[in-house]
Length: 586
Ligand code: B12
Ligand code: SF4
Image (cartoon, rainbow, N blue to C red):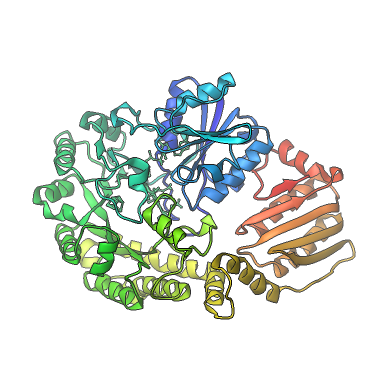
């Protein structure tokens, strides 16, 4: 079969937006498919990055998800199903939200799919239902069937991910995974639900074989806890040094306890580890307890000190918004990060990811503000915190981010960990300010939520406050003679009615008017083209490109067309254009 596998990109900007690195799930599954004789195409991108033919010429579409990328994944799945293609979804979001996902796809592979994926594909090829395949959810007539969960995979039965299956993907740092699972169980983390608490490692020999291709390159060991079994980590690092199979630079995620093992630290340094990502989470001891982190503030201080003594950069990840946190906690964390000279930080906002205890508790207590998964990226407040308003948590977190990544602190670590640290801080400076500009609308509606006059449930208030906020900005308008443009607002949606004849002139005028009228961010918009006539195929192409551009940051865009302007669809297909960022209702 011809199979296209897609990892959608995150819709919003986040601290890693400039990192072009896929998760390893699809490359592993793609490699398995290729070994089984299928034709495989791997894509990392969203609708606007994917050519129509990459969907229309495939026999099967497979899409990977996390929570913050799942809305884009659903749009892609809907589009593929509209073209008559069967769709399989998998990954960290749909594993815990299989029924939601089955609204958009045909099969969900819950959990690890390394051993269940090929049998599922064979089943689909034979036209049978996957009744016996573990971990699969699917629809049988009107009911949804959830097969029992599959066992944890033996890591040594998994092939190396062939990253070259991604056509045209350029990476500066390559992902390698040496283990799965984590013996800890932090309340906000979905890793243990997804990959289990049993720490499963790959054999050193196989890892060395995989690492050979990255000699002299940069590697990110994407384990959740690279040093959970120090004996095994040391064995691998020693072998890398002895056989000189060392990347030129590598980084990984560790817990603070790694710094207590001197031999491990030295081996990390000698094998070219130059940066560690550490889940510091909080400087509030009560919060550390409530996250079930099993670490003390002194461990964090010691960890930063020891890694710095070796010249290894430290990236500290903190999570704000626990019931034990208040605004002072955020201030104290900022002071702590600056005082201890952490090289770069992520001040994340507690995010109830499906599958976690945090999600379960906040949902039960009715504290989720929204189920707009696009916003579940740890940069937006999506729940009602205990000791502060959502707005204050949002504002204080970004303020701390801005203070950390400010001009006065860019050079703080130049003489500890060198120019890279300066470069990362400079990137952080730019990123956080850009993020704030793009998300100013979110501050506004969190502010609206805090007003006592809005007394009904949080969930309904979100859409209402968007409506109010948007309506204020809106003016009705009619312009040029060739085109009639009418913008109105119905139940949380903008509706744009276009009537008339679109040629180069009226097209430019129409988009000038629309850009002035429609806010770019957070829009649900329906554009009615039933009474539009295109002057030529070229105008139709321009129309599609301009519409994609205009609505690049929008959330949900629908375009209604009549049989007469089906030409729009034909043009898309004929020119093999990119999948439009809008859904077409014919
Ligand atoms: C590397 C990594 C990154 C990299 C690259 C990310 C990327 N391209 O998405 C970087 C550092 C950039 C990153 C950033 C973030 N990450 Co990250 N990251 C990881 C990490 C550590 C490893 C990913 C990996 O390669 N896993 C190994 C492979 C084998 O697993 P997999 O891809 O999930 O695939 C398996 C199954 O899920 C399934 N499967 C997956 N897809 C599909 C598709 C089909 C069709 C099928 C059948 C099966 C299937 O089968 C695969 C094989 O068993 C994971 C943790 C983890 N253990 O997975 C977190 C993880 C994915 N990240 C997470 C988060 C939250 C983030 C951030 C939002 C955090 C932040 N704000 O900083 C950002 C946002 C990223 C984004 N794209 O939006 C969460 C996602 C949870 C969720 N429910 O959404 C995870 C799970 C960690 C956690 N603590 O829970 N991340
Ligand atoms: S946050 Fe880190 S230590 Fe805690 S469960 Fe997740 S992977 Fe393990």
